[in-house]
Length: 187
Image (cartoon, rainbow, N blue to C red; front, top):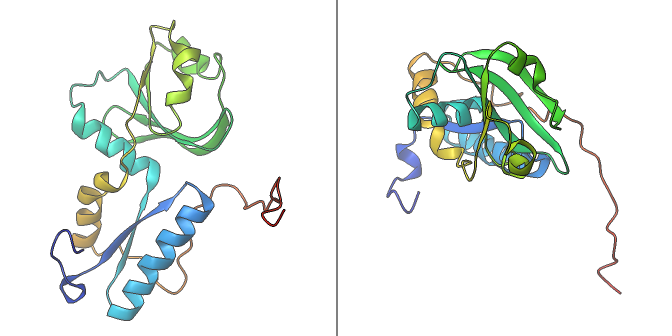
């Protein structure tokens, strides 16, 4: 806010990424957004993280073939990602899921003649997996989700598609699993 020279009393609403994503990141972002909305008595707008990423990709790469499917990916550790499948126009083809990816994961789409574009923080690790597959393109370093929420947030604001500030919860996709640290910080 300091950077944009906007004061709190100038806010008409607050938009936040609802997930999927990291448990801690979502919890902090949503809690901050809800706190601002409650304190300022303004509406809350929530955007699906993968949909925002897809919208940003389409805005940047506008000439997409209709037989191209877009798979925004968020890293979920190891070979797992949070992803969804979108058509080249940004419409949903397959809902969000946690997916363990290997070289055969997308054969169903490839067999139907689709080309796939993978992007987002979870896609980069699959460059070696798909580098020899001409139907799958991995676009590295494409993951600035916050900047892709503008248009969707504005549309939701215009249509008054607001969340209930008191009851809104992030879309975690998977349950939080607490772990113990491998090393004791006191030793």
